[in-house]
Image 1 (cartoon, rainbow, N blue to C red):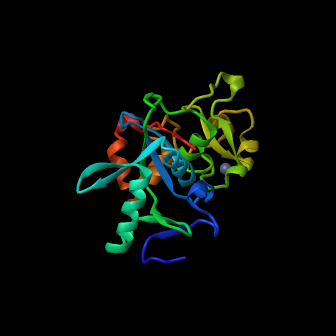
Image 2 (cartoon, rainbow, N blue to C red):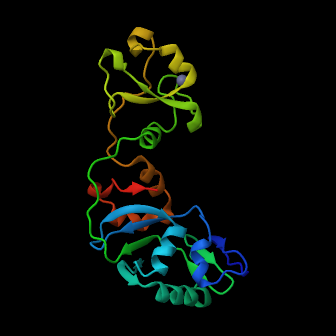
Image 3 (tube, rainbow, N blue to C red):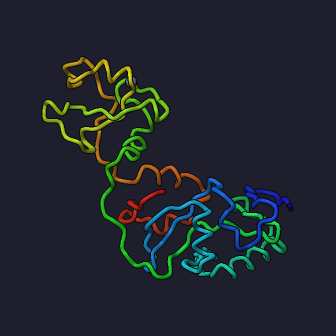
Amino acid sequence: MTRHAGGALCSVPEGSHSSSFNASGNTGHSVLVLNRLYMAVHVVNVRRAIALLFRELAEVIHIEAGRYVNYDFLSWREISQLKLEFEERDPQSDWLQSVHFAVEIPRVIRLLSYDKVPRRGMRFNRRNVFARDGNRCQYCGKRFVTSELSLDHVRPRSQGGEMGWENIVCCCVACNSRKGGRTPEQAGMRLVRVPKRPRHNPLLRGKLQNPKYESWKAFLSDAYWNVDLT
Ligand SMILES: [Zn+2]
């Protein structure tokens, strides 16, 4: 396997060939998926993205000199090959390496025949609450792994508390049992932060702080922050 300077290199197991590229596993990189109308609808792992490209269900969208250029998988492979041969390696790029060829991991792909528009509104679910609170117990302020956190009704259900962004927070086991079926005031506890519906998808916000995902920003105006993540 050839090693290239800069950027991360992901390998496809020995003996793989192009048709088994989608068996290369999850490399930890994410790919933004647009619908046919160039609206962000999803974030997928590299394996899924390559499978979509390989089956010609999607194409690569790549920024070149401030313009978006579309490539089918074959052309993208060829361009990748040329880059390897003739260009200085971009440190922000990541590559997937098979025995037969290397391909730059695309950051953005576009589905060729899907034109549904993204769902509006941030989904209220456990994962998004944990992400909003940064896995921090909202009473003691300490961080925990997900398995040691639960969701707490700030105002208990028995007192009319609802299941929603403004009344549900991350809570550790100790704080949860200390609080019991009481409001924070009744339990003499204080919230680290008043819970609110997040304006932006908290999982995406993390990604966007990474310069590798700079190209996502163009497709993630406020209206498109609510893509589903896998
Ligand atoms: Zn706690």
